[in-house]
Length: 158
Ligand code: ZN
Image (tube, rainbow, N blue to C red; front, side):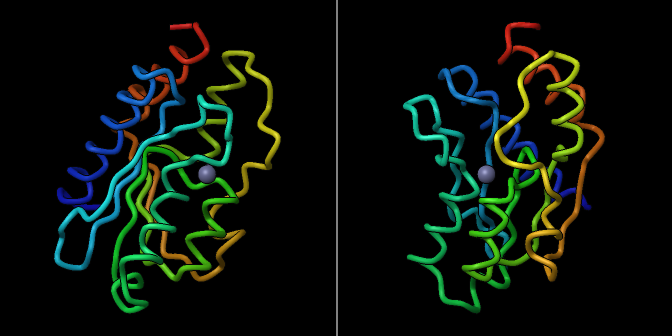
């Protein structure tokens, strides 16, 4: 992970905070093409009742509609939290490239356990268990405290 990766992860964590401030869960993601241009970004939008409205899923759909297979394969997806199995599958199906995440699913599980939040209905499998060929970097330890506090705030414990 380099300084450019850190910059894009910073944006993802800021999106996660915006999401929480807007009443959604604290997750944010962005899609960066091979030239380093941020092409699309989104945040969690599950507050309306559709629990599939994750930003990484939105990125996969956007990429399928707007990028060639070659552009997708050479793009990088940055995200505040490691992809869930649904989003990892979408990423794999549309042939996107490298994934860089700030916090892992394992960390999220630990934070939710500390809070006493109920377990998610979907298993927290690592991305490579869903997409064996995926190139994945993370977690980025410098964001751990901040992400942990966002999840504590979500559950009214921070
Ligand atoms: Zn997801």
